[in-house]
Amino acid sequence: MDRLLFFCGGLQPMEKIALVTGSSRGIGRAVARRLAQEGWAVCVNYCVRQDCAASLVEELRQNGCRAMAVQADVSDRSQVNGMVRRVEDTFGEVSLLVNNAGVAGQALFQEITDELWHRYFSVNVDGAFHTIQAVLPPMLHAHEGCIVNISSIWGQRGASCEVTYSATKAALIGLTRSLAAELAPTHIRVNCVAPGVIRTDMLDALPPEVLPQLADQTPLGRLGTPEDIARAVSFLAGDGADFITGQVLTVDGGFIL
Image (cartoon, rainbow, N blue to C red):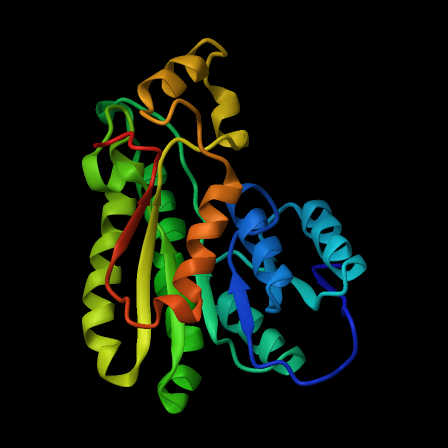
């Protein structure tokens, strides 16, 4: 089964509808959970981990939320369009898009293959391009909506052995700022969160002794958590940020001060 659908609560209309890409695990999972707790009807997007998406949706259902999970590879425009149609058919038009889906890894620049380069851009950048274009028409019609892109501090500063990843995350920052200027007259806000070193399974590939070193390099003295990022996304999506657009909110414990 490539699509999971659950309902939390009744079938009452819901105006706050969020699509969070790559939300079966890690940062995206924490973002979807927090938004659901704050009253958003949430679509949990996953590419491979159906089991993780199902467990999150069931958790949200048990807590009285409305949630659905839809499989889609965001690098594939047709799959993205199909996912958005399913959300619209189930909950209504998307009012908040969080572009979180991404791939990461380390490689020396001279060892980067064409396949790796294009895969990173197809997911991290094309994925945001596809999803924004898919959800934007109703937002333009309504003259309201919110888009939050998840970049990285490496997109702001760059990182050795992470040229491809850093380049894609820098592209998301450029997309955010440019699109925010374009959409501002329609009252659609576009912002970006740039996480620092966050304790997710992406760090499992690092030697264990590296994690304490990264914590020591962080002025606040600890690694970030997915919940730290979720709180930032929640703020940018909320009414308290209704005069904020085109901004990059760095959540890194002071790592790149």
